[in-house]
Amino acid sequence: MTGPATNDWFDLGDRVLKDLVRHWRFAIAAALLGAVAGGVTALLLHSHYRSGAAFQAESMPAPQISGALAGLASQIGGLNVATQNNAQLFADLLTTDAILRHVAAASFPWQRRTAALPVIYGYDREPAGWREYRTVRKLRKQLRVDVNIRTG
Image 1 (cartoon, one colour):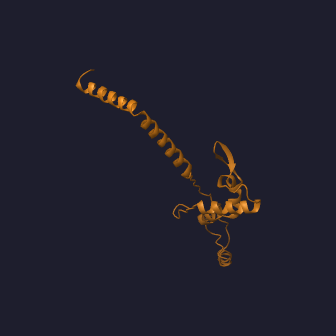
Image 2 (tube, rainbow, N blue to C red):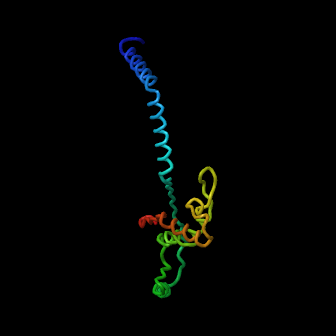
């Protein structure tokens, strides 16, 4: 299809090409400046990863004990033997040092290889105890556990 509209596009392309040839130093400088700006931005921005998981613990049938014994047990330390597993208990369990130390020791994909969290967080050159402490502390700050009271 040829016509006035098609010729306008060819003329515009021809003019742009002629301007690029005439100002080739400026075009190369602009391309290099854009590449440098993009590279610096990629290096300065932090990588951000988000992950999510959900689970619901199955509850065991409550033990059949007499009413008087259940009342006595519930008074000792707030123990409630007649209800299902508490969802908040599992949320609290996920943020314990034992669980977080286990996660901190695990390997994760990072920069085309697998690495433990101390390496990813940059604590790999510190003494072992300090490295574990700082890794668990940073992991705890980045971890969010929500409990849905309605569904458990």
